Length: 386
Image (cartoon, rainbow, N blue to C red; front, side, top):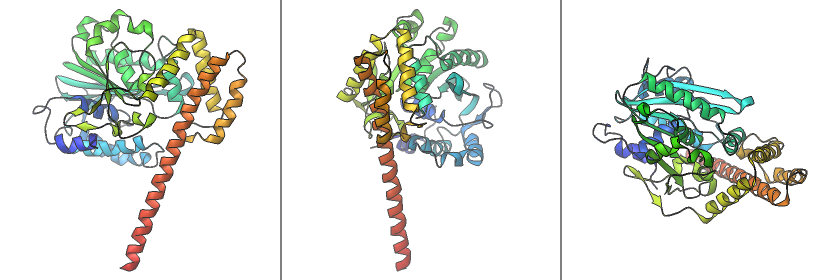
């Protein structure tokens, strides 16, 4: 299976002048937005910009090692993507600026974005998504009952600032929550700004509440939204969406297909499937059936209960969840007397989904460590023979 690393090998020698921007470029920019560029990229859009090549060199000296021991395989690969992309003709001279990074755990706020200027007249604004922390998942679920979460509010402010600072036209995009932010940021912009937007990419990001989809602002940008989700999407199928989506083939299974490095690439496009898996569709039906049954206030209580229960296990990330901790959650669910039996059943199913993914992460981690150990032992034997 070919992925975005293979794309860099195939298309890396072609400048954007020779081969125009495409959907795979969108995903690469969206993934690079996850990197911590504090002290590397200027906070002023268009001012003191830095090429991707020089940014990669600075990042390598200051931040790269902090990703080496990251528990999530997705994040481990991003510095490698930066390094490889920066050495290509296609990406090396792209200018980075407008970097913003705000995190406030008490307010459940996590927002970051930056601008990739392909040239003086064409830019890609990339919004950062969430990682596998439970706080990140909690913010995603907050979107089901809050008119505007903190990150969405900041996305609107950021978008207007960038439009005032830079000339030319724009692509917007992001992966996971970043995809949702890319759409939300321009729902209410003025016509003068709207005509400067070429396209908006939501890469497996959550949808929106019905009232937002039905709003005039959303309908005005409807035709510019490109939504991409993997076959077993979980995050991307949260909430409602008005636009059509394309289903991307992935080499992973289940929720691990959210890892965009697993998405299959062919030429300048992704490889597409006809439909979602039955499990993904069923999970979406289960979640939406539960949420639609609840009032906005009850959704808030449901989300609070869900994460109170999971976080009571002491886990901070999905990967830290275990079967032993799952048993303890069943007892806690029963203590929520104000929930009816059906709602408790939905809550149990969603929690089981988190724990199932936690076990997969653990198994894959053990498998990787075991493979590494075997390779080291083989190397030792070969050295002894010599």
